[in-house]
Image (cartoon, rainbow, N blue to C red; front, side, top):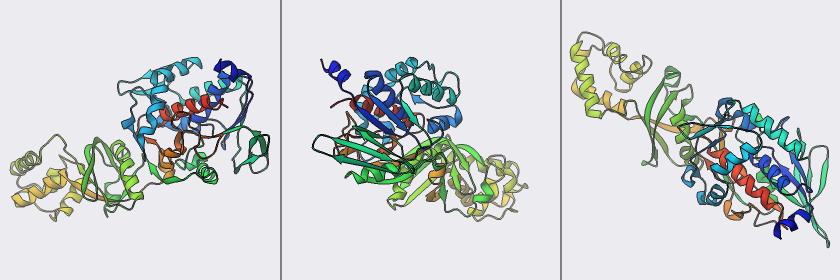
Length: 423
């Protein structure tokens, strides 16, 4: 009975943002009721620009093992219902329905079997077209209004040169500021504020970190698998094993991108943020010290600098000695036990203060956004304004690296798409 009511209930819906959340919402709504009108707007010349950019162009489209613990925000539990209702099996079924086959890696990362992001957006385009979803590209939305009369309430949306009217429902799914080169912006927060919503401050996530070290340029290009520890106000907050890449501004690499989420969040709160890099995570500090001492004894007449380059990069070795206040001309036999301990300690705890991030222009995602306690976690409808919905990155939910952000976008967009049909 409820489903037949939906079929007779004609609606006109506007969806702002043709990313993962907006696209699946449009497809879901039209599949449930082909009689409704769905207009999908995006500021870019094509849909799914962030989908195309994910996974370095290979499209890390999802993750086969998604849990609430993979998300950050004021209330990560907000994601639980969506992740249960639209889990990976449901996502896989959706992909098959549009002709998309998936490649599930041992790491649980999921890619299109074609290994090309373009194949994903092409199949989504074809599906939208087959359902008669009207897609308006190059259309940056500048304003949303709601007009109430005795008969009904309708939304209107404005671009720079046109106004679109008589919408019963509006879904805001145009993300936040990460990747401004893809026309990403925070207009969704402006629209939310207009309708009484509050939001938590935004910050770049999954991004390189700036440090206060004076030797950045000298270490640029050095890459090594390390253990990275994150300290907030002197307290150990997180530890991650992975690649660390030294850059002209500080540090990057997969371990840094992963740890950047909590680091960037705390930077936005003006907390003291430091990292400690362990270049030899499989060696205890005392064992490392013994190995260095043994090497020095084996070649006492060689420069300590030359011996150390057999252990670490030739860029790191001179900086290491400088930090330990050992002249680079010093021979191995001249380095005392205390200095050897200082060297091993530095390699075990290479500390740097984090001063900033690389910014939204280099970030894979944005943290912060519309506060989730003001949005229904089952329908994604605003608790402040009837007929207004939110999905995806515009909400104060950000996922770990590895397809988690896209999976939340698919899941939240799916639930919003179903809910858009309700009276």
